[in-house]
Image 1 (cartoon, rainbow, N blue to C red):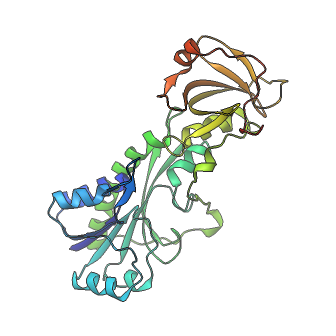
Image 2 (cartoon, helix red, strand yellow):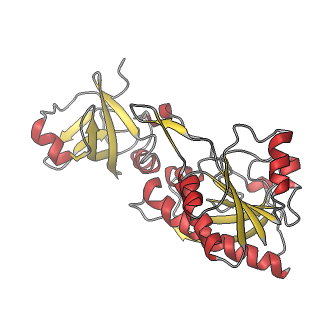
Image 3 (cartoon, rainbow, N blue to C red):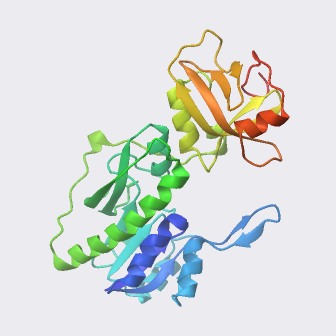
Amino acid sequence: MRIVFMGTPEFALPSLEALLRSDDQVIGVISQPDRPKGRGQQLVAPPVKLLAERAGIPVLQPLKIRTPEFLQVLSTWRPDLIAVAAYGRILHTPILRLPPMGCVNVHGSLLPKYRGAAPVQWAVINGETETGITTMLMDEGMDTGPMLLQDKLEISPDDTAGTLAPRLAELGGRLLVDTITQLKAGTLIPRKQDDGQATLAPLLKKEDGLIDWRMTATALANRVRGLSPWPGAYTFFGEERWNIWKAVPYSSGATESPGTIVAVNKQSIVVATGDGLLDIREIQTANAKRMSAAQFLAGHRMTIGVQLGSPTA
């Protein structure tokens, strides 16, 4: 089949790589425009574009996809199917109706749970012990189309969004090829999603990383994992920002108010929460690298009773 692939970040790479190894032909790639990055704000190409160029595949990076001009160019490629993985935009009806075999999306959750832009992060934040990949036929909704195939993946207690995403991406590539193979054979029957079981996974913002110490220790530890590597969980020690990269919850209660440092030992900083204690194991301060709590404490004197929170607290 003639396949157009739409994707942008690293999560989409295994899906494109799997298609390039398959019996079908990737005739073109659509990716988001190059974006400025870093202190110098130099334009950086998305990972999918770089892979496509190395493979000698034509790449389009339209600023807008809801234009007659873009639809005309896409039509000239005559795709039998459009495969989508983390492209970053919702496709509208003219594009969805263009390929005879439809548009197939690789989504990083077990739909209908975690519809939206950040399914991997929210699964970890919410303390899930398993997630997976769903392939589906796309409609104009946010991950609401009929499901095709699903495969599960365990979330370990030590997983972060950053460690989980590559494993899901690899699973997504395998499942995408299986999905297309079965679609061509006519053996795959789309299944309607149960909207009553749907949950949302909205896009995360930088401010979502601010720790609310009134939450339980378990919820905060999961949030630290789910927000790693971006946007990162953070709090303030006075005016100094602390990024928290690893933390362990304890169920033992604390009489101190949430956010209070209740103990300091050689390996960790222990903070009271809304329910239980949070043992901070890895930290990063402004203009410093990530370090273990032991490394941090070797150069910083901590006082029990200090309150962590927002810079205005």
